[in-house]
Image (cartoon, rainbow, N blue to C red):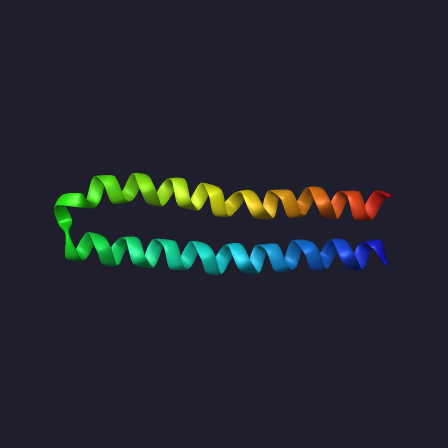
Length: 70
């Protein structure tokens, strides 16, 4: 049961992060196309957002290891 919980946690976290990253990048590119003079600031904000979104799957991996080995 722990292996199923670990696989489910990692899979759903990866799915959510993939969707979130796709939305972040697509909206950033759209914003850069509309206001090219703000491209530098948008890029920095995008990387911060992507980093925050990627923190969730890392936490899911930790939770999966706890579920797997406890």
